[in-house]
Length: 430
Ligand code: PMP
Image 1: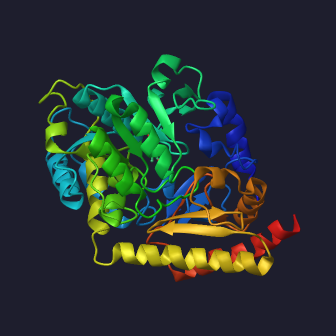
Image 2: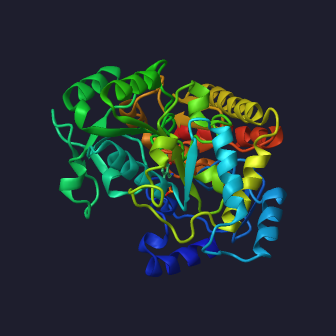
């Protein structure tokens, strides 16, 4: 594959943008090499500026659940822009969006639209702190909730559960308020709540972790967290920025039958436009300005063009059987990848929940962050590049989930598996 134009653009971009990108993972730092620059996208495909095409399992990191450039979404946006791009005053589509979200996700009695997943999670923990009058929050190692200060935290050493900053610029005084837990560890959560229970405003979790590869919850784990939060008066926040409208129409909370107090969304509800949302119990959301004292605002929030794109997307995914077909496609892909790895003698396993999946270079079943980190990252990186050369774009990091779309039909998956059989041979020979 020729990448001359991408290389030229990346060289220029590196002089102008930090690392040449506007969001770090795009820079291919963890897999090595240079990113390709996209000219256009259609269905399951990305087309780069050098004329190469790739089957895309990144899907803009989740929003493209019906494939790229879907005509229904594009037409909705085209129509919306005829009427202006932003009003700074209420518009009808905001009400329709709120009606749609509250109907599809019953735990959300009210919602507030924002412009990104980061804004959604930041706002949700402010609400939790404001509503409970408590300052501590609990998060999980390997879960990502955007780049808000309180989330850029890792567990302190030894017995210390108080968080320490993972980024310069995050005040230690703030990160100390973030307690960290190991995902899928029942006892750790029980003990933490025993120690800090009455100081904890909220526990925030990706109900299926999509930022440490893809880790599903152990049976009963989310219920265990629900029970701990209820018992100790802490709010349970499901960060469904990835899982929302993807692992099931009603998100992970519908899939696992757990009712959180607050939920955060992004990606799918924007249809590719910059959109996020948080929602939950009416008595909590009523405390947000202007109906209550907890402040949160946004000039572009509920933007008419973004609402149009999101509504068109949400319409499409309500087609009967949509999520069953998505899950079946994930299963076909993951079963095929496992068979190809076995044939090549490469230790490899997968996880899948609805339209999300994970790939692990190990002979163990994986459902904890420690296990995900212990996988053969070098093998993943070799596989990533071998797939890319064969026209398949996987997330450029061993710690990201893969995303399925309804445009990934049998032929696309068959082509992916043809590439994978060769790519696993490359891994085996490395
Ligand atoms: N929460 C989760 C679970 C995410 O995966 C992400 C981003 N991938 C975010 C929050 C932050 O969203 P955004 O990048 O839109 O700010």
